Image (cartoon, rainbow, N blue to C red; front, top):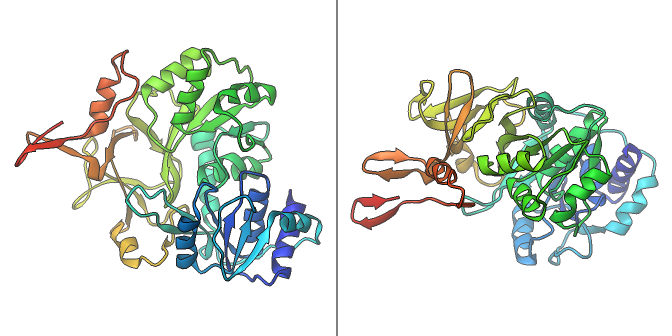
Length: 396
């Protein structure tokens, strides 16, 4: 793996790219993706992983915003005609056997890679991360995964997602564990069979993947699986209990975002997995629940925030300095998500700040309403919001 990565780094340098150059990645869900990603970082360049699902028009906007020095491209993946250099997968594979490049060492706070947000706020933002972000990942090994060298971790996501790149590849590799990634086109329903065949000990996916597996499989027979990991959206207690009853074991949840790696989680020593709780801050993290005037009292609702010294926190948004500044409240980066911290450190999730509902003067989280309704056995999925039925009157 190191030979392929460092050889590819040499190939990128031989093609005229230099440290600090931005390389847009338009690659499919194959092993070419992580090798090219890590090769760019090895050579001091700045890779930008993107989804193979994006259209030419969407990619054109990224090219205009980033002005990349080059594009690493699978011919089967959509990409507009661009003025910069394009390197195809065949050329990338030939680089594997080149002499190894030296690692480009330097300031850990310098730009290391760029990812795009999911665009839930209306517009996807280019998020700049520093090389130091890899240090933050180590806090998850005990604080979420329970990861060791003997583990075989399967991740169900695509490589462009930082959840997959980090949890599925870099973290297992960093401790000598084995990474298992289903090939492109593998149906979700057969993942339990693959986990059993390849003796996966940990499985990582978004809650929707667990829901789909449960729909296709009444029982989960995975003798080697110790537990599952989930992130990307709030896990419902219904999915957790159904997975456990089907024989899949426990699911441990983490909370994070494109702007910062996961920093709140449950882990294999957690005994209370009550619904509505995200978990506790990982060891080494500084987390606060903020009101308008700073941190609030324990048990009080507020915005979940992480201290600006966290190594996993972004450097900022490209071309959006004012928006970057607006996300900070003093020394705290605000997530836009609401929560409340208990005396034992557990954080209860209350939904998005802009999703809060007002009923009769009371601020109510849609998550609280949804969790209450999900207790009914006939309800499998639910969404709650409030509507204005007449001026100044809103009903949930």
